[in-house]
Length: 339
Image (cartoon, rainbow, N blue to C red; front, side, top):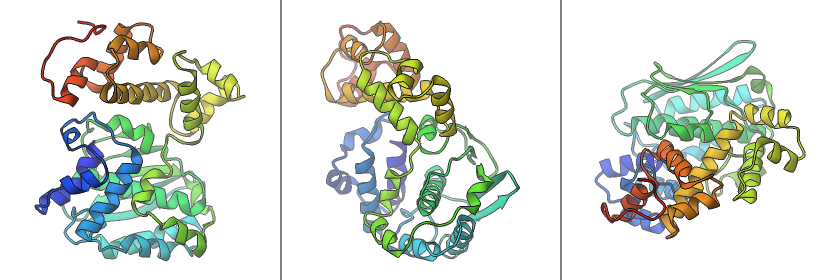
């Protein structure tokens, strides 16, 4: 929900009511007040494009100068003819210097590592956290698309205190996230810089259909091996699959599975926790199933174990979450919910 709120910050600052756009993307207005709520990424992408169209600003109204509709297209056209990734990044930096003067992007490297740095040229007044999240997401998605493979971020230092939604950074950026840095610094292997740009004009035309919101659906960290593990765990429910069980299902050794997940910046337990959290939140929001039934379906040993995990994920009990979501007040404790 923090990402939704971030996109809406400039719209609200301009005095515009976001309700019509939320209705068009089938995002319930009442969940905006719930920081633990989640929306499907496809709806998020649709909202992204509707907001930028409404404001005629692909920067969501967050910056001192608007980025008029078509900015992302021309960024793509300026880099798609670059011979290698490093050339594409340098072209992007020059382009953004013209259209986004509030943020300064630079690239540094040594023989082992590359450092994509984003700092403020002037203090951001609206949606500062989201502005950094958005620009890193935009550039990472674009660069990964250009070379036809995911650019694994080894670590990212963010220039603000750890936000409440930082656990999701492991899915979007990397599990190696730190905070309170002087500027944003995303670190990746330097050998990525030499990769050739594999896209051409024909590929660009297809890529721009649904962009720039479409980028939110590409190169997420819950992809490739992480996605395969997530699907295997989901298919095995209510059996609480182990690393060995999933490795056998995927015809891999446990050591290989562990290594492949680590290469994508994740771990078996992180994938398992994220799946259970998302399914738990979905069922609490969309069904009337009791807490004990949900716990059983998600493979927990008992409702108490589910209760402890849910509090760790969201900061509140399953029953509290459901009451808050549906606005039913304190109400009666649900059957099967620990005290």
